[in-house]
Image (cartoon, rainbow, N blue to C red):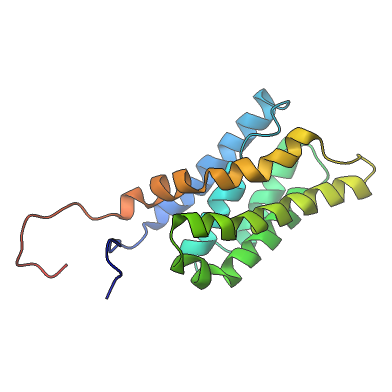
Length: 174
């Protein structure tokens, strides 16, 4: 039985899952091109990949995260593999912890996702530092925190198509 107040969800539509990853990738390309100085903005692709790695680990995995990271590296013109490595490690961690994360309520999930996002950002900063780019700015240090703060929004938006409509028929078991 489900805990009190928890909703039984419909199966995830694969088109919606892949479409949300593509939309997050497209938004990150726009965000990087038009708003490059606002480095504190959430990393929507990392958030979407983490969300689906936790909720649908058989559909969105390390390979998807690596491919999306390579695409973002090419789009940004950064060191090839910088985002790919970070997203792949983050996705692996999310898949490894997905059962544990799902047991917690939204606040607890946010606290479990924050170290994954910090690890991904630290990997990106480390790769840039090894390439001679220097350390992160203060705005870049805020990015994992703003991304983790957006976890409840992502949870609400990405699970919305899976929620069942309230059915007034009392004779149906589901």
